[in-house]
Length: 105
Image 1 (cartoon, rainbow, N blue to C red):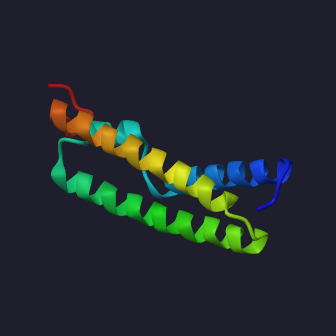
Image 2: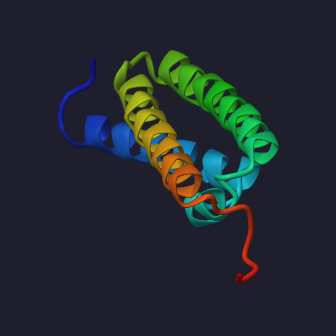
């Protein structure tokens, strides 16, 4: 593994890239919370979350290979773990409130 500033940069870039991928393939956690009471929409969200995980793994895996470092993998794992937790928390909140959209009453 590289030492010094380069390893921190690799970690941060991998985190940012993974979060960017989640942003590109999913609506926000706030949106997920607002539709969390609709099981069909939750299943759709989870499918796209899986796409984000796979794309992130390919991206950080390629970075790790090119740089001969595990720091990109560590950054990707950190980001994906956090994002999955965040989306699942949003879904649980939406299910608990019965929220299926933005309409009132």
